[in-house]
Image 1 (cartoon, rainbow, N blue to C red):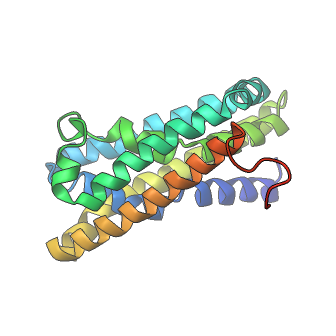
Image 2: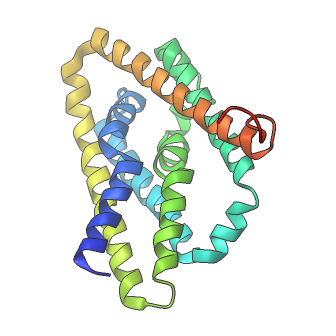
Image 3: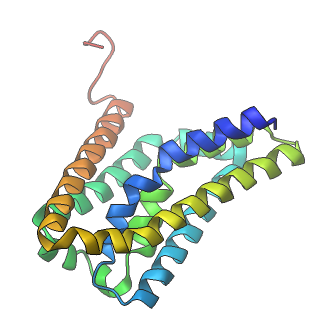
Length: 209
């Protein structure tokens, strides 16, 4: 992997994972936790999310074939997860507090690690990049170094989310929470559209493109 290829992989993964956009979500989901638990949640979410992306990369072309046969189902699952979280964020604190016991269990694995960090887009990018370097140990090692760098950036963004959330204040935080809810509902709608298109329910040939 050349320096240019490494930069391209880094930029692609940063854009897809989007740590700066995830940071406010992390801040909202962890705002009432003790600092020790916030730090643990950030670490677990990043380790679990990027471990999932690493598994996708290691699987390479085999993962691409396996996912390709079930991509519509993947889109449906992600759409349901994002829609649930987005609606509850629109409802405000009461909605988030009732989110399936997530306040008790913590949001590290769901929804932070999956689907927010290790969503289909990021997993697909890892499969694509790993496929290019299948059988080349040096290229794969460089790819995983890039993945680790994106993980470190994401962890730094999560750690910075707390002070930012504190500065916003309750009223501004409620506004931000609802805005992020709208964003997540929009993302869920996109995944739902893609699932329905893959199943042939909409977007049939001959229709408007």
